[in-house]
Length: 468
Ligand code: HEM
Image (tube, rainbow, N blue to C red; front, side, top):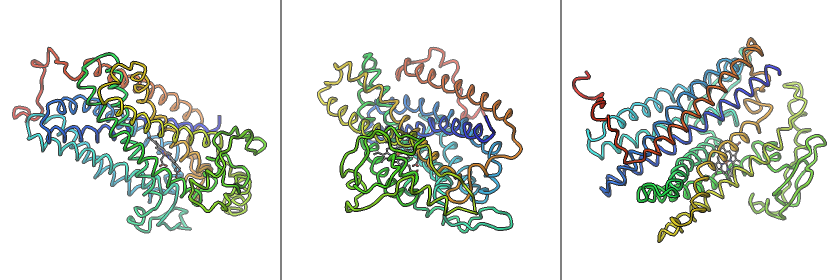
């Protein structure tokens, strides 16, 4: 395998793996803050138990998220030095602000929250968790400001002497219209993830008749949050799709498997594209649905990939000389259907759970609880599919229209080094993933009311006077 392919595999692997834990910790952080607020308002001990239990799962996912994030940054430096040289002036600022403001805020208050149970007033303790949740949302904002620039560059000048992109204005970066679609979509997707993990784990426990009242309340709260957030995520996703049709038409056409121009406003539900012959292959179409979804007048033409490829080759001739602008159409087409499909399934299941929780009917529906427990996986599939679309769909660019993937790779990294680091990272990820899942399952088995028999002897209070 060549250097570029190995570097791309490493980017894909680290990104997908990192983004399993990021939305989980962001989503659980918000859910835990809401649980603790309910405890402060209602003074019902069960909300305190919920805060403590789901807070433990949150802390575990946060820890793995941080470690995988470090590997992510490391692979940028190692494999994509030319990209870093080109983008450093732009990428550096939001990442520095992310580390200095958002991540420090998050980590400081996580520490305070974890070690001050019963030492500060419940209201103050709940505020700590809200600051953690706000910190993690701000983290996402800065990272996505950088990612949005890669999808839709704004507020920059190319320095012809250094061939680097230089930032015109920091606030200009924040006014990127791509950011104000990408950020709400990702953050709402993350909130959905935390909520459905709570729903799934609670359903699994209810099926095994463990801590009925605790899991019933957890599942209800998870289902309320999950349903609202899944619907909101889909609402923003819909706006993203409309924006893509003009911003990145090749990505849009691939998501719809449109090789030829679309003139009849139909929407393709199923397709098996023939990438060799550049043909849509077998398709099942729903008449007029595309027009309806896009809100057009029914006479709009959407350019297909064959037209767009010719236009783009012509547009960038001499400047970049790229032979083909086709993106991985099968992956984009099916990823989009997985993302939107699982989004819809989550919203429907959330509503069904709430319906059958009335009169506790769901408690005796073992098969329904089993199905609901599987929903813990759904947001991860939707998130991963979303990133596959976003990142693979901007091929052949790292920075859309400005800098190509082929130009971005480090000139001095070797195929053997990349192969070695790919194997090491894969093993590390597999190990971390297994350990995290095992630890979550162990905590879950112990349950919210477990009392460690040695706790009295082992308890260390890092905030006690003697520790200073
Ligand atoms: C009808 C439902 C949905 C639609 C129409 C939709 C639409 C989109 C579109 C068009 C993109 C690509 C944006 C770009 O490249 O500029 C995207 C990306 C993404 N989607 Fe969705 N989405 C939906 C549901 C979901 C759900 C339920 C989740 C997660 C729970 C999700 C998570 C993501 C993520 C993480 C990305 C990558 C980041 C981004 O580009 O915003 N999506 N989605």
